[in-house]
Image (cartoon, rainbow, N blue to C red):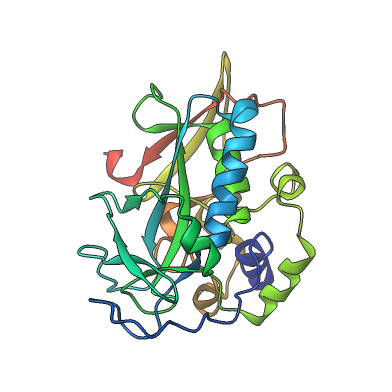
Length: 262
């Protein structure tokens, strides 16, 4: 069903706000119409991480991650900058396309933007919250629960559909991410074959409608994808039972990738 995919991509994310007017400064490498984010909102997400981490992910660290949205988007050599009305400075981006954001009172005062030199809607953003010691090929459910909360607080999900206005109804990110109906899109590192939840002796493979942005129920997928920030990475997407607390925060989310299969 076409609406299912659009709603899944938009219900948890705020309507795309009017673009910030870029300051009159010379910035090396910044293209026109960038896919920028609000510095204040990203700091708000960081503040939420500090408040909520004790309950969900006490030993985890937070980074932000850049992801491609359109085919052909060059994810290497990205110039990422914090731009205020009187300054601009570069933020280092790692080889895995993640970065940390320093707290800067001046950037808060000037309502700065965090701007990569890529065009609008060519990329999307997520948080990456990881607890040390989690085995390779898996994630910890509590980390991912917190990723949903921080991602919504920071307004990271990029969306281009007018139907995204319904997201204004979801103003309490804690309640949304803790609901059994939460449809926050996560992205795996590689195309997925399956996702399995493991808590002690309990194992459960996620059903197919929790993978690939519910594409199995969407015969009009080609028409819907331009409205979803999963457009290029649909084979890596999955939903999780974030609000089902029969799965504890230490539950392992184990991935089997397409290229792992014979």
